[in-house]
View (cartoon, rainbow, N blue to C red):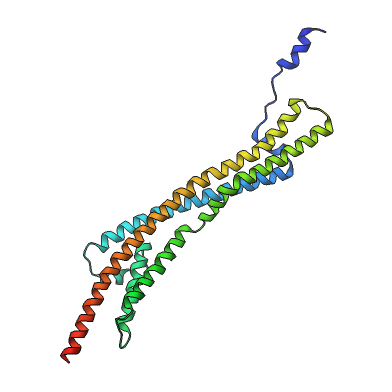
Length: 246
């Protein structure tokens, strides 16, 4: 036999396997896994973009409100401007506490007993509500980050099992026969990691942003509660003085 004829198959260019070709050649179960992981990745990126915009707006709204609040303007004037439409999380805390404050004074025979506790409770509930808004859909990122690689691994295992069954049926162990099936199976793991890694990084980053926003809200709530506490003491002292004079 001519040596050139033996060397010809070896010198032949290998068949190029594209990602789209591997997807089309994969088993239906592996295809479903890939499609599910890609859909989860798109969902995660939509959440990430939405949260980045939300946190940016929240941070700017807090900065603007604190600038106005500590500028020395009247609390009544600020409340009258914000009571119908708070402009952010911190403004919502302020409006909720001021609303409870004014309700206590508008009630006939109002007593200052328990007013401070009610205001603190309102602030705590408002903080919990605002933090819940910031944390919404973050559980999706955590789920994809933790489950994505395992779902991709499931697709890989299924694809390799299918490849081995095909090898056993054809009784051909050539690498050219084994490689495409294994490559198709490993694509599922790659897509799982593609979905999980950004979700994990974004989840950790966004949770840190939530913690910082909550810390700012807690700090403002403590400071505002102290201001209202002084107002309560002043009103209680004035009321007591009038009662003694009478």
